[in-house]
Image (tube, rainbow, N blue to C red; front, side, top):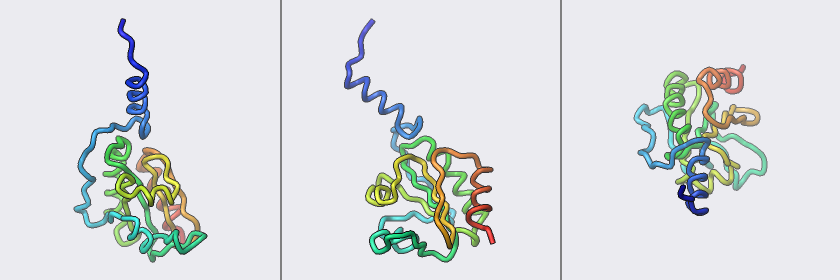
Length: 153
């Protein structure tokens, strides 16, 4: 029986534990052709959502409630969640805004927002504090959060 070297074993462990069983294979970015999902950069996040450099406490910059999907292309659960998020953007068009943040491309933003697990969804009401979910969650849970956190009157 052959033994596996420690660096190789460590590499395999990291490979298989990243992103709750995500794959490190690089894929193309999720499609944004629906026109209902907006990709944010650090700068656009500060303009449209929260300027963490100017404000010590949470102050949402938008007029409509929002969902922010923090993802990475290599994250398997992120890739499975993406179509659900895009469908919600279509279904709730005009009632909520759906944003996506590529945490690999926007590492400073992810760090400043305390994103440590993927996928992370941030539900941002117009007034009040945002709430988050971590990991792949069922569509029913997403809709419940939209109705109970974002669309409450």
